[in-house]
Length: 394
Image 1 (cartoon, rainbow, N blue to C red):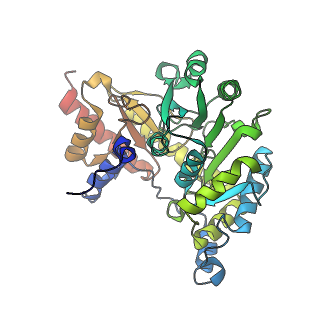
Image 2: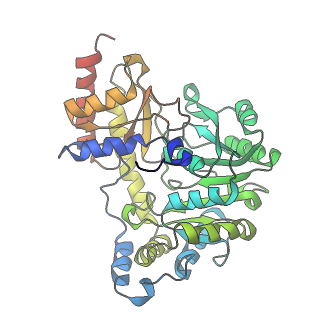
Image 3: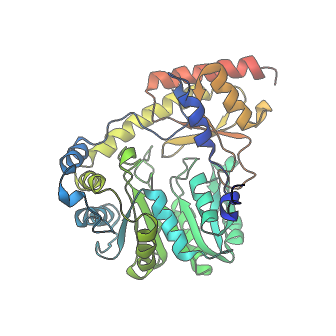
């Protein structure tokens, strides 16, 4: 008999994206709207720097465990130049093997068994389950769908009571909403009222559309001292395979994060760190151009999907993704997604447990970064045909 699995492992809800990706992998030529890949090439100067680093002793090393100095400096400079935030590259920035490690390192550093961690509902499943891995208790404040997935101040204050950490991102996953300045101030107020740490997921903080702007919580008065920012080059620079992330915050807050990182991730790839440093320190026009491409794709896909009877969509302010409410069709999200893939070769993701465990059975997610506009339109046409054939009488 195998040993019993841990309560920690039993508590985790499997990511629905992983299931759909495995099914789609078996169908060559399928329309891949289920995972967060991109078909855009990463910045050429980042690829060049990575290639030149391969085989050099300096990049084939464990040290420094908390990241190459030029990468930590590039991260610090981006925060300074983009947001006016200042972090010391020596002691206030830890480079990690992806943003997921950074978030887990912080949670492991500050969350004890049973500590309450506030998140938005819905949220990225990878955030919700990492809270469980750290032993925390998930607490949620709802994003109101009828209000464009924005927050309710009264509900936020209620949910935040007794929370040790406030853990969120903007643009929020999977809705793509960018929280307004007043919403960010509400989150900050809740943190102060409860003496809570703010853990911010900035994975897509540069991917914004329609003139919107992310308000970083660390920029609000008095918030730098209680905020840890996590970021990466994965989505902002389409450097998915590099697996480079980081955590940044005041020196005292970062001390335990540095130690946990050593025993969790040990180090990030030296070759990848060289490429990430080049991306962050180099010309930033690449981000602007990729955002233009993604906006066109977003608009093309949503224009077609809004024609599908039974779909309710809130267009995203930023990020790679948005979700549709399919409750009018009278089918569960999981059944809808699996049948759509079987019949039309279009892969999308059911949103079960993307937030609270009871969220998502009426919602499906679309990603618009891994297919060109023409194929996104074709995918939407297939979805419309599928809905008409199977749910037209609803």
